[in-house]
Image (tube, rainbow, N blue to C red; front, side):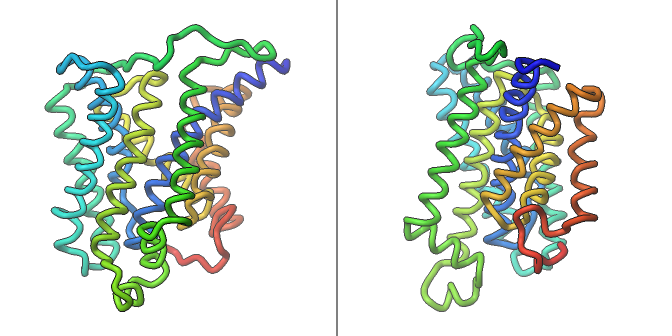
Length: 293
């Protein structure tokens, strides 16, 4: 295999891995604040892409405006999920809340199917479809958008959690919610923010990926599962480990599809996850004292 082909696989893997990383980051943000795995995270990704297409064609607005509306609407959806489904039963065991998020995922997917049908939709590329050639590999401009936006978003979240009062308050809740409440931090408000940020991150991932892989009402299932696999791969509870896990998973999936067969590319993510759980259950960047959930 020549260098250009290998580079082509790597670019594909980085592009998909960036989206898996953003999805995994959404899982981690909510888990750190609530201790709950939100299996509706994949539906936030789906809503970002589907709503962008809907606003673009139904309202006749420009693509940037449609994307802004879609991301805003998905973020509000995340807030409603927390207020209407999670907060009323917040004192239930974590497993109950996980089951509730699975039900929310099914509900959102069903509503999307009713509203938009089972067709596959395309969102126009942000800057055309003329490829950029680098060392013999053809790189689509949208792939550069995916990588660039993912890096900006990751840097923005790093700044938010390390340099803002709200971010530090969310981190305090993740370490000890009771102690955080005793020093005046509104824990429930932080939980609400975590769902909103998670939905925002998922929506952005759905928007930037839709021009490449297209979008439909059921794309969130596999994206959510791969995002969860990336979250475990990087270390549950480690935000930037989750992002790194997504990148690693995407690159390995692309290389596996190229060297072995594309028919097994979806199964490869879960094979890797099972192998890692046997070797290092805490994940590549997780603490060894991580608890089983």
